[in-house]
Length: 292
Image (tube, rainbow, N blue to C red; front, top):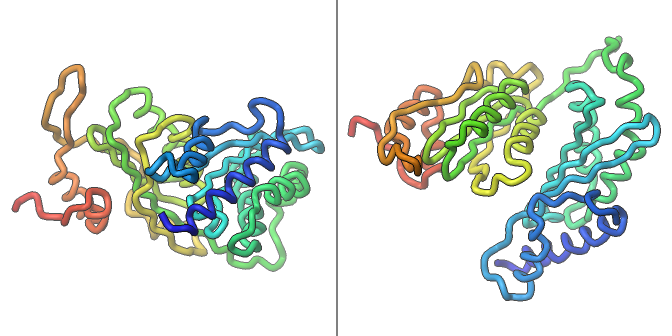
């Protein structure tokens, strides 16, 4: 890979060392892949050729006043800190609206950093200094302002690819999370497994973090489409609910569950929802009508 990626990875290791010194107790920094840092070191030393997986982890922060905890979920793209960091804070003590405001404030603050600047430690400090107001002033947030200004939100649509989706408990979890959050889309089970989730950016990112954490490794977000909106985003939705998509399949229906979904039917489904362009992105082949 280019030297810039290697330089980014070296900076990421440096920041992780700082975080482990700030949170020295076992379990305070919970890596999604416990071998992530070792694989990056091997890559930088030249003993590993393939680009290692991204560093993903959760830090649990104790807020002193009020006595609450915030889980900060972090994903470092390979080119961070030269590209934006992915952060998401959650707490059972915050309702959805409070959590949305907290993450908007955090994202806005991180956006003030210049490319190349490490910012996770600063994000932690911001949460420790500013999060209390989101817990203490619940009622104030809902009080109408005398001068209401339109609030711009980011509407996001994520196209997620998995080698397969078979397990009943996993399928149940995906549907439960999709229906709990204010998102629409579908989950196509079988081989391959495809998930589309759309809604406000914060809700889609929470869906993505929830379904893949802690150990779903054969899954990736192949494509994302984002749009700015001042409304509720309903006019941007291509789907009206979040449902499981069951198509005809062919192959072995035995114990191996090695059956492939009918991609021709899937293409027709995408066409009906104005998403034909995604077919090539997901599978790397030109889309063709199922009749051809």
